[in-house]
Length: 603
Image (cartoon, rainbow, N blue to C red; front, side):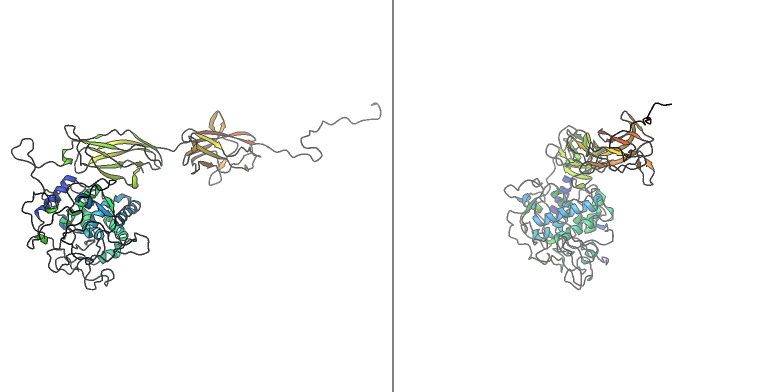
């Protein structure tokens, strides 16, 4: 991939309202990766942090700088009541939303350790293309027109000469960022994916682009539930502190809830990072510049005149504390704290938390492969014992276990409600038995974590029965014609995957392994009279290997035992089969020889 020879010209400064809004959103959310971001909205060194290859996915192309509304949107299952700014912004076009969720599922399978949330793809999609220009895609997820960024000609941003002969971006002189996730052609060449299984890797298809973005963010074994890895991933997409903060703001916003809207009905963003860069194309070339006419339903921002002298041409509000300016998220003057003469900053929700308490979750227990009946729930409390809402809690499965949350993930984030309560998604037990724990921690704080104990128990059976009542007999030194097959059940239902043993014992009352009589064979053909590690199949059936008899005739006992205590004894007989005499009727016995008859008395 060709190296980036320049950098996008960063705006000298964002407007006071936008900067304040970004910091307010981050401080309030305590989103992952926010730790260490100063209150002035900058992250030391973040702007200079290179992506793993030294380049970025977008070539540091321009992006949309709109910020989300201050208040959280409706819950994911709710419908937007009577419209409104935050509900409109929370709506994601149906096909675009589907692409993000499918990419998350695919990455959960191929890279489960990455913990990629689809909301991160939505946040980047919002900033890069306004969710494919409000969801202007066809039924297959391809944009109705290609979305192209300005030519990367070095005027205001990187200079990247053509790498694809115009195949993706139609520009044979310079590269341009392409598609809803804005990949430059040289990045797409190695990062491109076929997300909709049509045999093509098309950067203008939202399914392909979303999956590619997920793989790109998960590169280098990143775990996006870790703050440092999340930050590195976002900066690898576009190396800008402002970009990083803007993406985090949308990530936090979408995590609080979204809802689906029809394709083409998504909110179109207004502000771009290149609005005041000479020679830059102000928007992707597919559509005219955003209209100054208010959008249906309204946006979170009031219309304001552009100031050509201000950064980005967006103008600076006269009072950054006035609601409605700069995205409606401007800060308000914090009240004084504790009667102090010098007012201090209002603590964020996470800063108010003194501890996490168990909110009624008992010990978690489930049989291998089954869902847990209970869900882990915790309560965030202040020192006074009062509940603290809007606190981000991380739930993580810890211990030597393959138990996972819904979607196969090991960790999830949940925000506490007004009652201070956060409930993790449902858990499903894996096949590995034993103890584990779910650990809850407050994101952005070094408070002790709260562990909720759990246990995965082995699959069990409470009854065993042979599938045939045919007698099992064999002549000495021969093999039994029929194999032993049993069916295991638990509470009347087939018990699949249940561990079992089969042992040839001395008697029904003596479980000692017999040293004579019938036997199984190991892989080398040697006699074996105890088998372990057996498991029933999906129908609860267990068919034992072939049995053989030694030279000792008699009646013997096979004992089958399953996890859960179900036991079955099977009788085996080893006996000679007498050949019938040809002159004797079957079942008849021969009388002793009689004295020979004579004609007269003995001499």
